[in-house]
Length: 320
Image: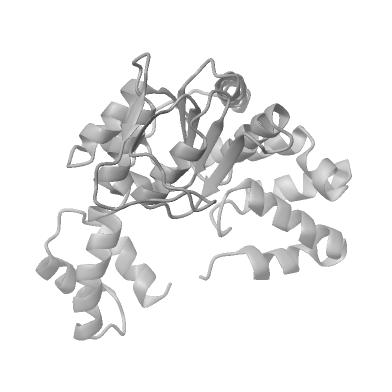
């Protein structure tokens, strides 16, 4: 374990420790660390991991749940997500929020529904990455008409900006008429260079795909809690209910059994079993437990089945 990884573990073990106490712990427990490095990590890691980090809900305690029961629970969740995504595309739902861990099928489920609804992409858009309030206003204006669908996928920067959140609350409102305004001095133009009106009616649909747990953010409180609560109040909110390593493993197997590796990698049943068994055996050593990891391991297996274990360990394991 590196010096930084050791410090991260200590910060997580002692979330209430002061900066001075963290420095003491680092110096006592981390071999080779200097006082300067301990001082820097005491400030930066506490802020990164505890102050600015998204809130995490305590996982539900289900000690007697079998793998089959977990699979049925997750299958129901994703079936509901698919139904709600399709209803959103048809305008039956104005706003949908889907929350859950990264890399386990949220985006794929929604994108599949959007592409089936709008194969040409003329009235829908999937936005990923950083979005400013001005960019969000222009986006809402462009896709303001009935039948238009905006998917915000892992564009969580908008949840840290009060102006952006106020725009979203207006766009997701449950009132019959959703009016959105921009009264700043900033004058905006559309893609054709034409001035954008300062107020318009939004009649489209918004789907949010996020790793943030809104329920946990609301429970934690703070300045953003009221905004999260307002968005949940205005939207259909689905939390994927995947909190433990066992949940992740069951979900990965579920998607592989449904044919992900067969369809995307032309892999046979034997190869699928090798990949799933490897993930189950080395869950704590792999860099991540996601569907992307299953695809990476499939690539390695197809490259050289005889050297699979060696290739996978070197390329996919976390540093020890």
